[in-house]
Length: 257
Image 1 (cartoon, helix red, strand yellow):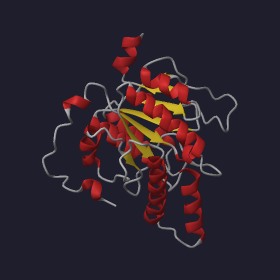
Image 2 (image 1 turned 45 degrees about the vertical axis):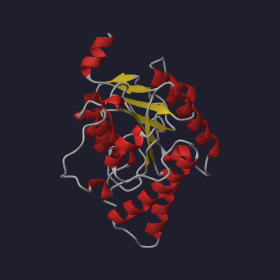
Image 3 (image 1 turned 90 degrees about the vertical axis):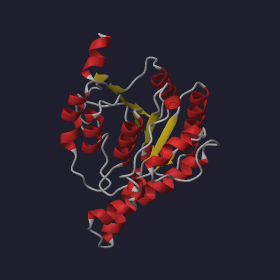
Image 4 (image 1 turned 60 degrees about the vertical axis):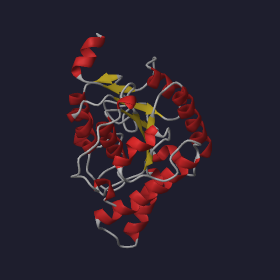
């Protein structure tokens, strides 16, 4: 469970210069994308095709699979069986995310064949032209937090893919007046989202507080997009016009004005 921290105190290698030319893109693939009422093989295959086409253009990806409804169902069932320990409930959810990650791996020809649990292995796998794929890592950390941490480690870009078009001023499920926020800085991200996080196992939110804190402290360029529109996803990666939310540092936003 904690092998991502193995050899943590050993001298770390510098991230390869060959990978620094174009930022690595870390994609947090929401569990709702992989499965809602049933597993969505069609969408996973289309997503794999999009990633493959983008890789041909020189983009490098790291994928992190979420748990989604399946994980929440397992947590609910565990509670029915009398399990109330949040650490244990998180462990159950992490197991589901790793199963989802394994399924995601099978959709790619060039994915590394095993679900990864150690971020220090990313360097070599990217150099071998394979796609690293993770699930959850540590109880208390969502897969979004895992993806944000990996983006921080690699100096990469963070993309959240879910069933929501982006970040809204209020939850669009409960308010007809909700509107999409196309651009914001990291401080606003903290104000809009971080305060809504209760840290309950399996909680469904667009980005949790820990994720927002990591994105904020390293000013990681962030995209929040709807997985259903993969052309839109490709446009965002290529720097074209897209629908969704981009989170950038204040200086980057001022440069665009």
